[in-house]
Amino acid sequence: MATAQVKQSGNPFDIFIDGLRQGFRIVTNNLLPNVVMAFILTYILQMCGVLTFLGKYCGGVMGIFDLPGQALTVLCATWLSCGAGVGVAASLLQSNQLTPHDISIMSPALLLMASQIQYMGRLLGVADVPKRYWPMLMVNSILMACLGMFIMRFVVAAYA
Amino acid sequence: MADSSSVGLQPGEKPTIGAFIAFLLALCFFSGVFYKMPEAYKYLGSLDFTTLLGKFGTAGGATFVGKGGIGARQGFLFAVSLFPGVMTAMGLLAVLSHYGALKAAQFLMTPLLKPILGISGITGLALITDLQSTDAGAALTKGLYDEKAIDMKSLVIMSAWQYAGAGLIANYFSIASALFSAFLIPVWLPLLLMLCLKFVGGFLVRCVLNTLYRKDFE
Image (cartoon, rainbow over the protein chains, first blue to last red):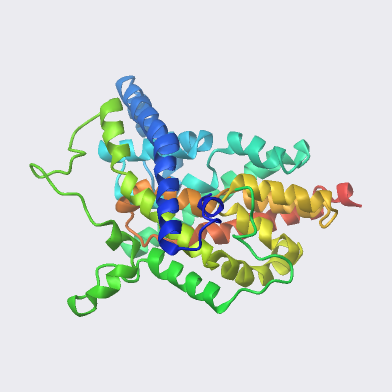
């Protein structure tokens, strides 16, 4: 993270600029490819009628969180990669298939269940957590994401 | 992040007054309390992240991102619009971290570890580091286990805390910030909820380990 780059200098302006540089790298190397991929994926799903299908048949399940069925694509994408989830959410928001209300409700899930496959290696593997506990940890993350959306449903309603 | 010492407290280290001021400033910048201040207090907007981001100019009623675009071209333009927000967030986080904001956060969080998660305060550094860097948090966690500073049960509970929302602060203010403009709630609210749910998840895993997996730790 940014703090590692800034150890050499105590000047707050240098630290700030190093942070900006770090942000530039994140957008260039991480966000931009993920967002473009997500927009292409959403376009494909839209053309193939998958979004309409999800809206029609998954509305009931997602209704628990006061979300339309299409929101399921965001959750699936974020499970694979946080950047992809945010990209799909942005894409669906721009095409009016999701609303700011839906994005606000989904906000905790976008991170709590994000990039689970990737973090298996980067976190659980590195920390040497025995594999028999991995499914429990994954279920726990998804459960917390669902709980987060359920709470946000009422929080957003209170703010509206 | 190879060296985590600049982020969290080392054993025996206490956060300075400066660290608490940096933590307070972090709360001001990202909580939105100074967003859209009345004219008389407009200067307080200089302590607000969203105000500092400003806005894009418009052409024909829309920003350069435009309206009605689809596919890769629209995705690219949308991604370009994310540069200012992510860069500003990472710049502010770098300065606030340098002055010890996360050390103050760790100091405030440590008393919660034993009663809720059943793990010792020594794990605070690894957990707070994970909020900024998943890889560094994982490496510190493994280090604690290898040095026998924590047992297997603590390792699993710590990993549960880290795995749900890994790299939370860094990812929230970099990747998820792309959606901040669509939020109907203050930016700090989902972050606070996610931090609470990390503890809820950790507690839940602790309970499961103490019941279903009890034999593993006898």
